[in-house]
Image (tube, rainbow, N blue to C red):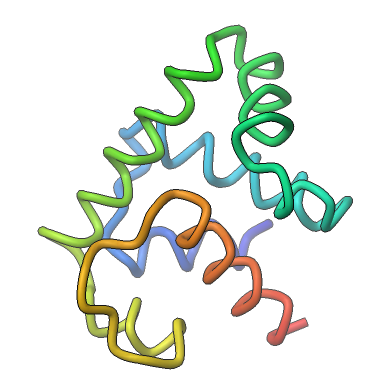
Length: 108
């Protein structure tokens, strides 16, 4: 998980954001089962919410805030590089998780 943490920090997502920790745990879950990538809202967010004792909607909101932080204040060049193409708009939560997952998976 150290690579995941380092990648989030390099993207400009600060560890003071709840979304940082939700993304970290969510990616860990995705590595345990790729099925999470097929059902982000109904399965992944629910399991993250259960782990942190919060709601699925709060998980979605905090992850969206973390992605916005990366997009507007962070390292957008690195995000484009790991996506493999130029992103014209801020990626949706599921798309962002998928981009990070596939980048980390390729590094394994």
